[in-house]
Amino acid sequence: MRMTRVAATAAAAVLALTMAACGSDDGSGTGTGTGSGTGSGNTATGVVGKAASGSLKIGVKADQPGLGLQTGTAYEGFDIEMAKIIAKGLGMQESGIQYVTTVSANREPYIQQGTVDLVIATYTINDERKTKVNFAGPYFMAGQDLLVPAASTITAPEQLAGKKVCSVTGSTPAKRIQENYKDAQLQLFDSYSKCITALAGNQVDAVTTDDIILAGYASQSQYAGKFKVVGKPFSEEPYGIGLKKDDKASCDKINEILKAAATDGSYKAAWDKTLGASGKAAPELDVSKLTNCA
Ligand code: GLU
Image 1 (cartoon, rainbow, N blue to C red):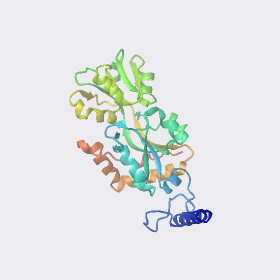
Image 2: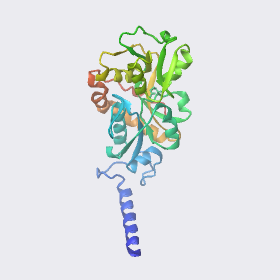
Image 3: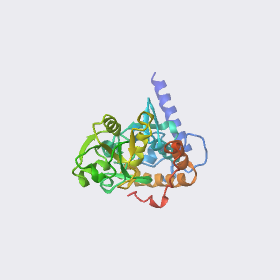
Image 4: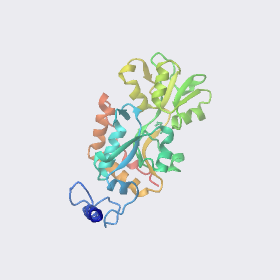
């Protein structure tokens, strides 16, 4: 029994050494490892180091059609495709991604506490959040907008005075209503799908968040003809990939991966498969703006 255990331990050690020497478990040969190590095996830390060991926990949204939507155990959407691009660029198999559902308010704490390694969840880069986490990207530019019933006369946030408007706790759109449109009656939930249900039930007059999120709900078949997106965005919401504040090396590496995705067709393919399915052309990923890693 004792011998067996010793033999097993030795075998495991040999296996570990072999894997470290190969630097990669897909047999694809002569790569330079993770790109940020010293060249002597896997010395990388943070997200790059975790990816080299084959798995990453990525926080995503679960109820935002076209962006991050969970059906059964599967997740789909543009943010999910971005997660796959990042994982591949870090040398990982797609099967090593473990998706973790996040809501707007728990993204910073999930990163800070290590509940997730990355957040790719319609996550606006801003200075306040940068005091807590690091951001690769932006990989997309959204803007705050309004979703209203098809017959509504609301065409701008100024007209929300005295009206019930729904948004999500911990989001930048909710904060903007609280600060700039104080006469609106803000109703907060933890996720946008609850706001949509409230709008469908005439319990609120409008839902506010990023235009791209609202468009995803409006295009769902059960709401066909019921809602309209006002279409006059009143903020800039650059979407970033959140990671630990002290992990600048991984942040830089993810920006390199985004840069490659902008030119090798994978960014466009991610769009075409998800948000672009309705015919909207893929945006440009502006690589000159990948300057947020700190
Ligand atoms: N992009 C905005 C934010 O990060 C709104 C979308 C969301 O809540 O996920 O707060």
